[in-house]
Structures are given as C-alpha cells and as structure tokens.
Length: 308
Image (cartoon, rainbow, N blue to C red):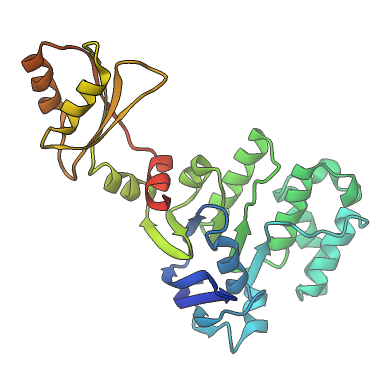
C-alpha cells in the first residue's frame, strides 16, 4: 500500500513540530525514519496513523484521505507506538484475542491469527503469562504482535526494538525484512546500524523538516563527495601543521584529535581529495608523514552532518 504525504504540518502553540514535509513511500518499501529527539518523528507517525490530526497538509494511503476516511485507514495500519501501551493485568493470549476482536478479525480466524503471532514474535515460552510478568523485551514482542494481529497492509513501528537484547534484535530485524516483502513498513530507531541493515530507504527529519532521503548507500555516497582522511604528521608544532593543512586549496576543514597528538582529520572540499596535496606539503616542509588513511563515511557521519 503506497503512502503519499503532502505539505504536512503540525503546530503546537508557536512551535512547528512538523514543518511542511512531503514524501512518498511505495508499496513493499521498508523505510527507516530517523532524527534526533524532538525532531518530529513520532508526531509524523501519529498523524499517519490517525492518532493525531495535522494542522495542515494531506496524507493518503492508496488514495484514501486520512481526513475523510480515518476509520478505513485504521483497518489497514498496524501501529506500535513508542510507549507501547499494554494492559499489564491481562494474559498474553487474552490480550491478543481482545486486539483481534477490536480490529475486526473474522471470528473463525482469531485463534489462527493469535497462534501465528505468538510463533512469529517468539512468544511461545511466555504465552501463558500475564503481560505484567514479562520482561521489557517480551512486552515489546507483544506490542509487535498486536500491531500485526489483523494482518495490516502498512506497519508503523516507533522504536520497535527498544528493550530487546542483541539476539532478539536480530530476530525482529529478520521479521521486519520478511514482512517488507508484502507490506509497507515505516520504522523509527536510534540504532543506525539496525536501520541500515533493515531498511530499503532512509528518511532523516530534523527540526520538523526532511533533511535527507535515500538509500544508505546513496546517503553515504553523498557525504563521501567530501573525502575524509586521517593524517599523522610528526613535526612538533601541531598548531602550525593544522594552519598549513587548512591553507591547502583542496581542504575544507581540519580537526586535531586531542586524544592522539600529531593526528588530524582532514575534510576535503566537495568532489576533491587532498591526499596528494597533504603528501606534497609534508615533503616541502620536511615533515614525517606517518599515516595517510582514507576514512569510509558511515551512516552516523551522515546523520550528524545533516542534523547539526
């Protein structure tokens, strides 16, 4: 199910939590939604799931308008909110039965859906417990199960792996990738490696605006347009070396590493590389060039660049 968001805005008083954003998600895409705390991720997800009304703008799911068809849209969306509200005094099976019924699952299919969710979300060992007796990780699994109990076409998952141990994270990651073969999935996470491993595409929001959109390879490639190299130069005067490096025509910035004397991070100007210029500078000044290493751009670097 395709999603189209046009000029979406949410205002609280004088603050624009979401500021005129537009994007499209195709059927079957797994999209990572990233951003610092307070950037507008959860607010956007709440508007998409009809939990909150936008101040202005439009949201369409396969042509259905959130403003005009909220009840129909809710049937097609599975939502795991950030705080994962659960009825802790209920047993897992009873809770999933309750969720299936309020989501309108056909009576003859309720038990089948419950068994499938228990198996899919790894709840078999805990299935007879009350939710209040579960660890945070297993509660998160119950939250995932309720989001999927009615077999929705769109899954909106806000921090789905919160509280899970590394093994559980890998299992949920596999599950999300598998679900992405037949469903549209939007997930937010602060674990960037998880997003990179799971998602087909990444959206980064900052201060209510979309500041990056593309695959992880595309985003890293864009950042790699400014080549970054690590340099170790033994010459005794770090300040003078830094000033000379900054004077090179190909260099945009130079950062001295406090924890490693004589080390510098040299950022080249767009589409340039400063390796040769740095080498020639060392030869010219008689400096000992001990290291000259290119640094691969990581998603964390891209995230910091577009959100600072």
